[in-house]
Amino acid sequence: MKRLLILVLLLAWFNTQLYAVTVLLDPGHGGSDTGAKMFYSYVDKHGKKRNLHVLEKDLSLIFAKKIQEKLKKQGVLVHLSRSYDHEISLDGRAELAQKLKADLFISIHMNASTNRMSRGFETFYLDNHNDVAIKKVEDIENVGLTGDQLIIKQIITDLIVDRTAKASRLLAQTVHAKIKKKTNKSFKIKDRGIKPGLFYVLAMAKRPGILLEVSFLSNPKELKKVLTPEFQEAYSNAVVDGVISYLRK
Ligand SMILES: [Zn+2]
Image (cartoon, rainbow, N blue to C red; front, side, top):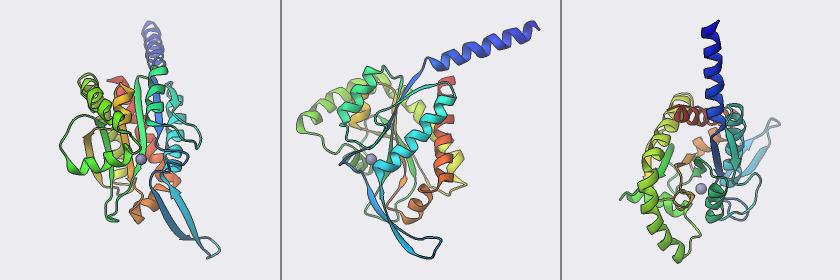
């Protein structure tokens, strides 16, 4: 009986620990900033050919809302940088992270490339690097920055990297491993790995954070998979598992 009581108390303590954590989920883009956009053609159940305009901003919001709902069930306090389709600057997102005193910042994006063969999921955390391929992803996600912001970014990034890189890398590793486990085999989505990246939104958020590139919308096979509720469910569950296991570490 005494053991049971201790167990109950321990579980209660553990739950309050999780409640004390605030996560800010950041669905990439919004409003006139659509992010990547693709056409998806399919034949409906009446045999009629349909064309769908798929926008990164819509998919990032779908994933963010799913992850939010699941994380809340785990006792984590979760906010979204936007909960509907509207424009919000990278600074606005970062400021929100500070206002909410978020413990973790997770930005959600869909990748795209002029090479339709490019495929896979990848997870970024804020750190310095000299990788040309990563610079291409940064250019897409950092779009809209002015000259001043770029200078500020360089200064702040160095300071924030020192403070957050270790925690961000661990968060990236933990979440990425779960994504790999849940989507790599079942959905045959290539693992592109965990990568350092200089993303303005991660630097300005000034806390441990990651940027997820769910998959390539420009790859017809991946686009089809990403639109299925099964994949959306599996990916969102993986992110939640990853965050929870990071918090337990
Ligand atoms: Zn994006």
